[in-house]
Image (cartoon, rainbow, N blue to C red):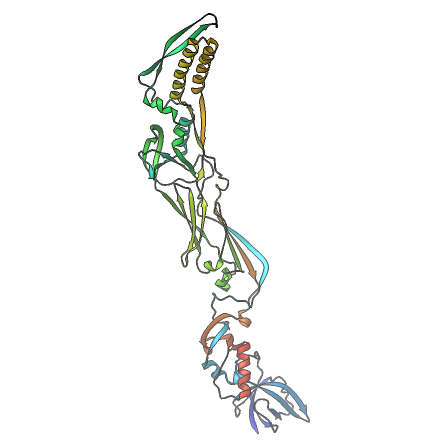
Length: 489
């Protein structure tokens, strides 16, 4: 005979939970029997024991599931199966194992593939903290590169670079495209004789009349085009920090009225954009990683930039730093996060080339020289009796001189594109929805060594090895339960 305590008890078959209370009866073991699956006979008269589904045999120091009850001539027979998890709970709880998954503790940085993603995405647009680039030419700043040293300029090699506001550049352009009234034309005149031929081939007279043209050394320089001293003109879609100012620039030999300011060789500006959180981020930071999250930064003119979500597992702010060379107009964009530093670098042309030009007399001094040479031709033709040729030379001389004084337009460079400017860069975030989680029954990734008694609830163990007084068969069962997932209760 043996004492057996019976229970009406609810528990998972893969749980270490142990019952309390119960009713103890003196029972008969059906022989032969083993400790893992014994059978007992119970004489309890008219009492029906089928409500008992669990038992404990103190002599065996084991808990049992009652698999079946059978009745024969007033005797109830219980077929049992050992509950190794409850029987050896203390041995299991004292052991330290590598816990893959647990309900009580998890590591949100580990990707959880147990819960699959769906085809449902949510999207969110987050604007940059400011608009880096203007689109309209009435904004921004012009930088003009010229040959000639002057104040408030940024020198590089033989060129000097001046910065102008749009109104100042408009005035400067008006000077270039206007008349040559900004040239120094005062001074002593040049006097030469202009031929006058009258009559026909049989009867003609030739006289030389004096003509005075006011001119000095600056006038002689008009045979050179001042626009040729402009090496570059660039419009920048932002306003850099300005320094000292001046009212004119040196353009070769000329001093051209222009409101200019000095700027540093490099422009730098920093913007930020907030990284939105995955709507289900409470389930783990891994949801910021692909394929659960996709991030795309639209930043013209640097382009469309896909970003690796692994950089945003913890960081919530993306810093965008722009550096622009104020001479060439080339720009660099650097993206950085606090934990990793610079994560992306791109280059693009930021400065927009602007064509420049001038309306100028095409070589006033040259026209004068041409007129003087014509005098000699007229006189020579007249002296040889070729009056017709003398008349033609005289007319040609007048025409050449007149044409020489006609304004001509000189244009340098070509205009660039500003089509990509005028918009605020933004971050497009796309989040994949993940199916509902069930921590109670499936847990979440932990991947750390823990003493098992410190983690109540669901656990899954990698390569479990429990030291216990159980039999080899029972140890195999314990190993399978811990490897496949069980509940420490």
